[in-house]
Image (cartoon, rainbow over all chains, first blue to last red; front, top):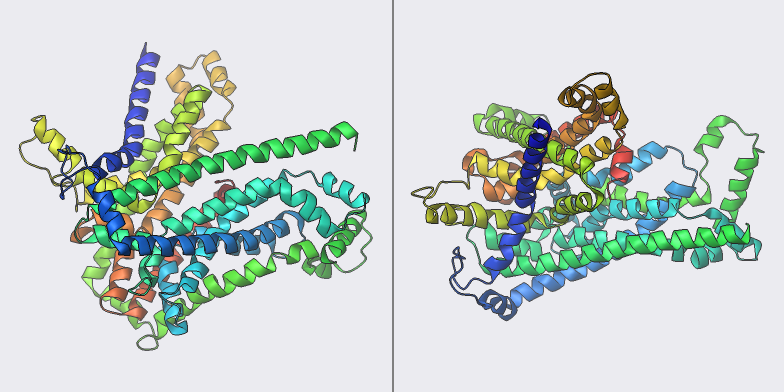
Length: 275
Length: 302
């Protein structure tokens, strides 16, 4: 009896926590369809007013485009640097491996306020504040650990005998990498790229330091629309941002599935031929 | 060419034909290992050097010495910010653990389908922008927000209760952000606990509750420590949520840093605050790594 009671109260608590975790997100979408400029609750009229507002105001579009550019470039740079480093960590022989890993993962740990301040101090001297390059450099460093983590876990699952087999059949090591290994870890690389994209797309703290009239990203624009007085357009932007995140999330899930299938098939094929 | 040399060295290493001294062998990098260099150099220049410059600036701007650090402790205002930061982080950690523990426990005993659902509930906010979540919390908590209006319409309260710009508001918001970081490591530890140990304890005459408290809880403590430390360390550096949900009385160090740079341009002072935050973070991490495999935890996070 007490066991059932404990279980029941546990489930109730979990339901409440679930609501607590999800409710804020669920609130945003209906609020964005609110006609009132105070976003009153419950909404009196349903309208797409704030979405129209979003489209009509060129500064929102401009900041979204800047964010897209920064995020795409950061993801690209992070994927190249991160994949190379993952190969080194998984396969290479390295002195000071622990120290090197610590440096590579440090961006996960150092508070973003500190990253923002230090980048700001540095970039002021170099004239890199409010520039795409400045944003890309910092965002890449923040995103690269996620690529490293994703690609490393993909690489560990790759059966090295496949490369050996390719080289036995006459492929050079570089060919073996591009023809065999890279296609096999491609889903992990893509997942890393998506994570990197999201990190940059969402990043606001460092961006607040680096942004200005010349270059503002979407999160900074949203920040100024919340900070002092609430601009209801932010509700529409947030809803759209949610959709983007959920889609990306779905894509990441898909890449995971692909990675598992590819690794399993390749190893199975190898075992079948008796290698 | 480079990869060929790598394979050669790989083979040589595994056939053990190297006769050099151990130090030389230790310092040798093969061509696979060399692939880490682009990222390492990139991070040195973009990440490490700016941190060092900031550190140096905290001792030199506006004058050489410890003036900035003295200024922090000389003013009761700044000392209070440090105290706030510490207290709020502590409260956030306590509340987070209190909620994360039963949630993670339920995940371990739930059916796989429900477990995936619960994991999803944790991961969706994890990947939702902090800005979007904080904005949603404002809509929820403010005087004319969802909670207050609903409670008033239901007749539970007469006038709005101030939830935002208060200590409770900050904690409520920060716990929401921190929960996933605590649930995941706690769940990861709980999952590895052999449930037969509980059965054994019960078989030897302990009550189920006794077996839970005497066997399960102690075995899950490493996960709790990991989740708690991660939560605390992250909470120390929060900026967005306290700035949006807290009042002027609950200023945390992150807000003070931004404020000092953006409104009064005291770079050296802001750098000193940031250095203190950085050193505290590093010390806590060093402490954490004494009894946790941080690398594995971070690498296994995705």
